[in-house]
Length: 447
Image 1 (tube, rainbow, N blue to C red):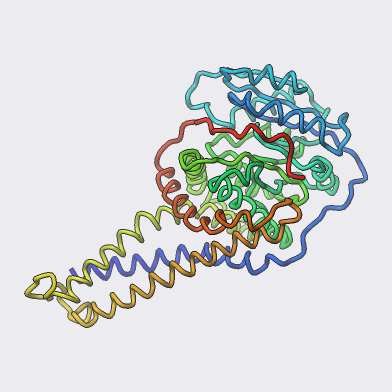
Image 2 (cartoon, helix red, strand yellow; image 1 turned 135 degrees about the vertical axis):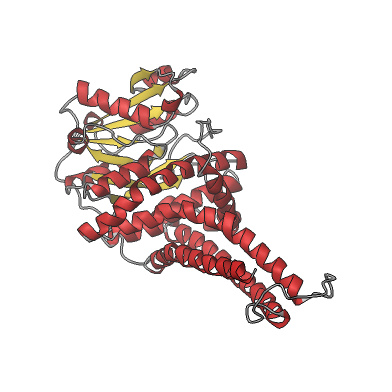
């Protein structure tokens, strides 16, 4: 029994060290939040963009998305086109998108393994390479529900004109004030954009790319043979592949994409578990290569992205190791610390009394209680502060009132626990595409 107890003890400390490394990196990002933003200089040239939008049964939102892009951008209309892939649609997505002004292609594929975003993305990019070769300088990928700020394409053009081949946008929420679920989901992306992405760009580190508002050089896409990230988390896979290709992955803080966030627990759970499944597969598939690539190239970004994907594994450790271990720890120590209460005549469970005796067990329980209180308080304060900080620093940019988002800020820590459970389940449960409940009363972006 004593050997078993000691083995668990050391395994637990190994996991604590494993988790602490990733959390320490996040703490560094918080401490460096105040560094100056990176703004790309005004472009000397106007480049042509193809905006691609994969859409599956999105008739509720696709029309508004296309119209907003065509009518509310500061960039000249003749320098960009919008392509929509109506992917296995059973509604009027194709018709609505075409009437709104998009170039529409319909795709039908009965293979269940092809029911994910990577396939319509590849389909559209292949179409552009085959039928519009040489017409565009870069491609921007958006989702069907995405709205963007009026300077969006202009700011992406500024970055592209400086030589940026790959860049992600600042992610915000188009329905931030709807309810507490849209608040916590939106705050998550705003926090990530304002803190982690902002600091990475200033330190010349590479970004974890996001499918909403991803810009890629047309030449680069053609050189690699089109879209090559076909997994369940295509954006994180594309990130890994380009890091291994030694490409730079940038963040354009002035190009803001507003996403329709899940507005209930079910949609939030499904979204997180789906992302967790894909990211976890990429972590084990590309993680070792990124680790080796760090020593080959000396680029810290390989480790940074590896640690970012590692949060899915951390969720598993938290739910499936820490919780059962400390329950076991409490039970064992309680039985030995208070044998009379539990009707035990002997406490000689362990061969060596130095491993655990009545006095030591009582001390362990007291220390554990203090540790639990300390961890909960610190965890809650840091998460809450991080959420508030991201919103506060960009409140004018996003035209938001922080006081109205206090419920979401205070709930952010609890949301992270729900997210951990969903991520844990998502690691092993192969996801199916499920339509989210859309917010259809938004007519313009938050400029």
